[in-house]
Amino acid sequence: MIHFKSITKKYPPNVVAVEDINLHIKPGEFVSVVGQSGTGKTTLIKLLIAEERPSHGDIVVGGWNITHIKNNERPYLRRQIGVIFQDFKLLPKKTLFENVSFALEVSGKQDESIKKTVPQLLRIVGLEDKAHRYPHHLSGGEQQRVAIARALAHRPKIIVADEPTGNLDAINTREIIDLLVKINQFGTTVVLVSHDREVVNSLKRRVITLDGGRIVSDVEKGRYVL
Image (cartoon, rainbow, N blue to C red; front, top):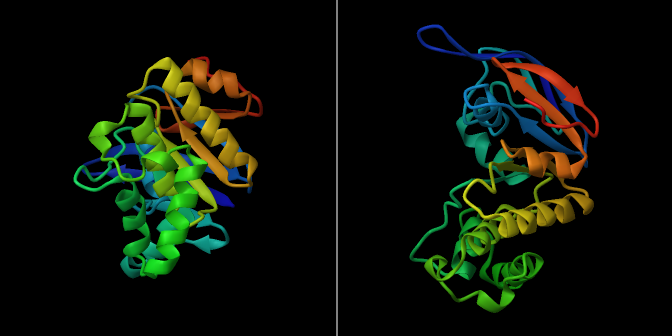
């Protein structure tokens, strides 16, 4: 599903963000990527979604070598990879329905398909009864659930959750993690980037630890101990 083959990313003048990363994530896995700030987690995600290109090595996603991906091919990759951010990135002047439907509109989906799909997505995240509310009417946890619904719009094979609970309290954090586990149980590969030891350790899933831009630990049913 995801292969990083001897990946190194350098930034001018001579900053090494990640170095010699070899990583294989299988279809349907739930993997946590952990490490202190500045260890390369964000760079790893940017490389995976082709926001950045590696300085050395190859990245293969679903059999597609994206190392030298063309700009006009990126939208196709983004439909395979749904991304969830810490700060939700919702459009404040659009309703929940419009926020989710926007992801489908920009890819050319027909109105009839959108009207059918969006309520299904909002139902998955438990917000079908709030479809016509605006983001500022919602709690942080609810806003993140909308962001998850939007990330699911194209039925991606992979969900990347970049610190999705960083702005949430303990109760909302648990709800978001439970939702990601549910999505994973449907067969979607989930890559969770987190600094939250309690969250990561509660999952009892594979844990990849970065330090100094390198993978220093990769353990099945591991723990975040740094």
